[in-house]
Amino acid sequence: MSNHVISVTLHDENYPSDSDYPFSLPIFHETKRITIDFPVTFFVGENGTGKSTFLEAIALASGIHIWRKRDGARYQVNPYEKLLHKYISLEWANGKVPGSYFGSEIFNDFRRMVDNWAASDPGQLQYFGGKSLVTQSHGQSMMSYFRSRYKIKGIYFLDEPETALSPRSQLEFLDILRENAKEGHAQFIIATHSPILMGFEGAKIYNFDHSPLDAIEYRETEHYQIYKSLLQAR
Image 1 (cartoon, rainbow, N blue to C red):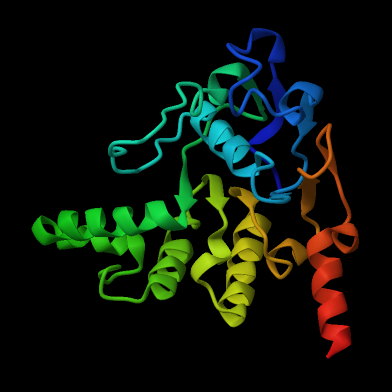
Image 2: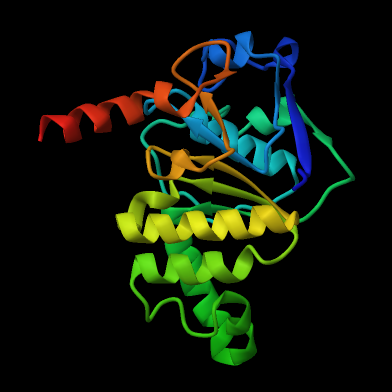
């Protein structure tokens, strides 16, 4: 098994602001560099700790396009919200590779876009499981996408992929990660709240609840401890 991206460096001395999100988060000042030395890496932590923001920044710094509709009118606009990728640098093992970014909300837009492509070129569906993603449930279409897309060499970013997946589907998703990581062509960086997913054997887990960013053992995560206490209480 091998990685494509092996480290991420944050250049906080160049940040355009210290008072606006995400540059206001101490974790992005106190963390200077992280190593990514496993094919599967998880970002975990409470909402608002910056894990999804960091995930997206690494994806953008990798040159990966994030499919999304243009935002509508907003009450308050933060001009710095999507700029973190400009202030990080990546170390590649053997040069850049392609990849993709998955977010559950973004995927809804993406699968409709694929259906539009297939209306004029049905052959497009062969890259996404062979049938329309729209005609399947959200969870089914996600699994179809995962099974097809991750066979291709690349680096893959996923933001809370468990959102629409049942526990059984999450276990199937772990099999997809295991198979493609073992083949050595795919690297995964995943932000998650799922103790099922973060239980992937051999993964590295970065904990965003403490600063600077550091790795944590699976059984030390709050997610594991909460679920363990809940199940034992039953």
